[in-house]
Image (cartoon, rainbow, N blue to C red; front, side, top):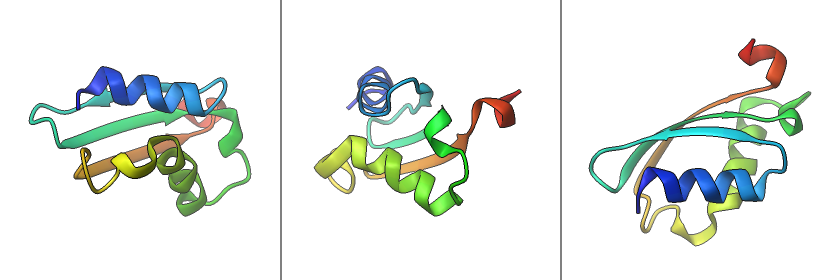
Amino acid sequence: MDPSTIQSLIEGGLPGARAEVRGDDGVHFEATVVCEAFRGKLPLARHRLVYATLGDRMGGEIHALALKTLTPEEAG
């Protein structure tokens, strides 16, 4: 798995989302995701939305994903 594939999956699964994904070892990643759909949601709910875009890859191809989830306003 590579960062650009994860970015595409997240952006494809969350309409209007912008994602920046980093990771050098192919299994541990960090992502910042900005999406209007996060408005009014607590962090856990936001993370679940992102995890849903990755499906079974979480815990398999993607061993760990550290997330920062923001609305467009929070991102500034």
